[in-house]
Image (cartoon, rainbow, N blue to C red; front, top):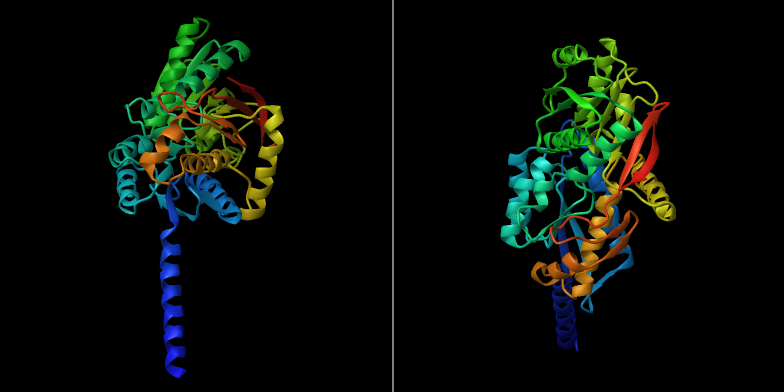
Length: 381
């Protein structure tokens, strides 16, 4: 009896070990990459938090794919907004055998990393990179669920000229893939309108802190609007220095400077209504409750407000897993066609992609700032 009991016990232990190993194998690893260190770490962490909320929700509900239960594991990496580091962490995720990637955050890191994911056959959805080049490289693994810079630049130019009645426009960009790309699209569309003139074009970097020289040169051209292609970490100090130089000029930019951090970074350098910016996404009134619920849940989970693209990272993660479920497999080669041709109803709207990988029917949300708070102006296409 004692010997038999030992055999039963040993068999039970072995069964548990085998069961545990099988359970450990039933994990879907999905990468997330953003700049979670450096000047725009607050925006990168916002994206990561959105993806993490989706993973928590999926695991709480249970993920069943092809009749098999899985646990989703988020492998979060920091590219610091640096293209070289971006490709390094992309290769790290490929080596870790992730089944998909949400990210990267910046166009400058997303574009070079996308080649690595394409070569490995790993689908990638960026919830924040807006440079058109990203989805025009012929990579069938590259997707984004926000509007691109062509749409963003055209909408901002139209608003500046038609609604803002701007006639003399100065342009500054930070020479990054994002900042330059957005500024180029804005300039192209202003010129196309024929209703305003570009009176100056100046350049800075995404790490600059002193803008006196370029602002002084711009001041001499007497612009009634300054357009900036760059991020909030530069836009805020630039606004502060504009005030010091006696330049109460309207200031416009894209999603990179459209965060709640701008009033804090600008200090007393920003007047109510002076700044207009656009977020490369937007929800219709009927979807607002879902987004409001997400923001409340995010606040409870992380103790801070949503910055910009957390909802889009959240939707990107859920859309990717939904494609796996539809295809009946987490194998990238199997679920990639379902992702490319599928449609997922998210909190930010329908996530569906065109032949290039751009989101269909991309919307934009215009914002201004009053009393130190971001206020929505309109949702446009």
